[in-house]
Length: 66
Image (cartoon, rainbow, N blue to C red; front, side):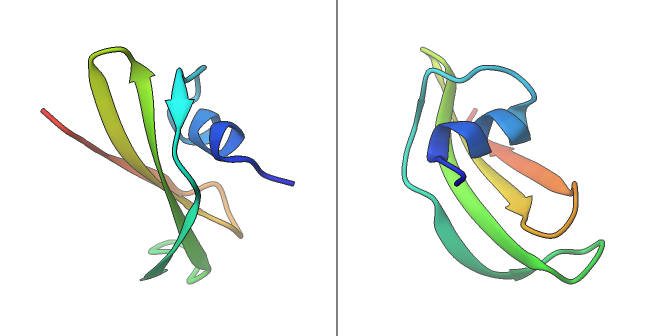
């Protein structure tokens, strides 16, 4: 079972401090057409990131708040 923290760590490829709940998106993966999930997380105390990860392949991307 994937938890919000483990999904965020897959996207970030590193440990994260905190993660919000996983949400379904209405997006298809640009690489394989699979379903994409999103999760908001904090990789550090001063940064919040929304990450997206395909359920069927290794594709992921992030939106970083600047």
